[in-house]
Image 1 (cartoon, one colour):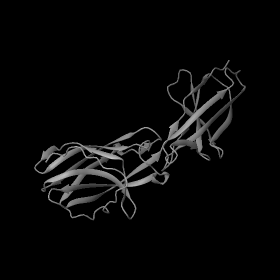
Image 2 (cartoon, helix red, strand yellow):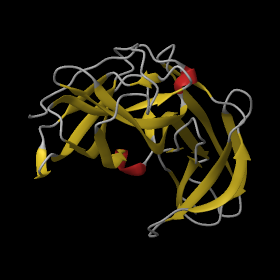
Image 3 (tube, one colour):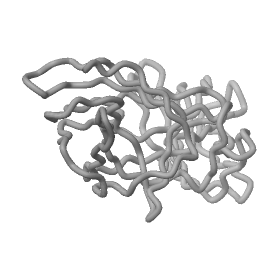
Image 4 (cartoon, one colour):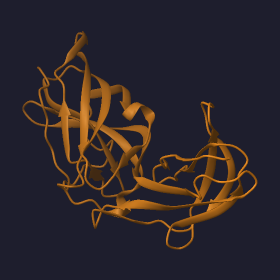
Length: 245
């Protein structure tokens, strides 16, 4: 039968992956192109997902989802699955969107980190199948950086002071908060160049503030870059151009 749209919400208890009856197989599962899912505090994030399902049963509501923990906790706010894209007898490909909206649904900071991937389908008349897909997806809190380089302009050979701040999404307060102790790269791009080069690395203080000095050698743009971790997404600041005379 056709798949149609599926809408499901957080707070549901899941059957542990692999504990259902069997009767379907899932392959070619891909979530967000293999990249982490990075979520801020206000904007809905739509995660592209795709999978193939083979079964001889009449079915309804196939979906791929994220889960973890011995109780099989699930993480999503809504899931929308396409109709069957028929590949062969009893074999369908599906495109899916997994939605996360921190402005509408409660999220906990503890939900950042590694999640497993499972797929499931319900059969007409009862029963279904839930399978672990042996994949890991990282769900991360978004980070932000600011930058200011001064003075502007500056005399060649003088000191440029570069400051900034690193913050991270707090899903529970729905605000960005200081993210202290992070190792952040100071990068420079000379006028006319196409890419940035890392000049030095600086630790933010306990309030997330960044501060360092460099010698003014040529006109160009300064920025900060943070590469993230297993629970926090990477970010780069805007660039601040300084003219060297």
